[in-house]
Each structure stands twice: as C-alpha cells, then as structure tokens.
Image 1 (cartoon, rainbow, N blue to C red):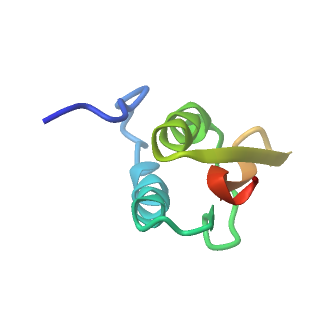
Image 2: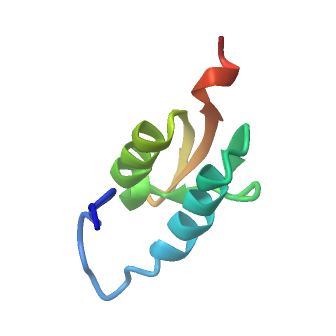
Length: 82
C-alpha cells in the first residue's frame, strides 16, 4: 500500500479528517468540482487539501478566511480547465 497523503498533525481536535474524507471521496469519484458542501474548511487542512488536489489532478482554490480558523475552498478537476 502506498501513502497518498499524510496528516500534518494528530492533535486531540483532529476531527478535521471528516471534511477531508468527504472531499477525498468526491475526488476519487472524479467529480468536476469539489467543495465542502458549501461550508468553509479548517485552515489546518489547507496543506493536506493541496496535496490531495495534486494527487487527484485538481486545481485548489482558496478564498476568504474567517476567524483565522476557516477558509473557503473549492477544487476544479484540472482536465476541465483546458
């Protein structure tokens, strides 16, 4: 088995995996546009999301940040950009 993405920390509050799992599943399915169902993602997941996008062929887009904890996010399948 090959490691695809490593989690950057293992803090007690690392429930961040829930949003990552949902987003990763959509990428595995090859959805043309992926987001967190209209909700922002945790800032701590930004690096992991970039890694997931790189692996699955998506372009990551980050926008507004709230309370230094949340950031808007969506990913577009790269082959849809051409």
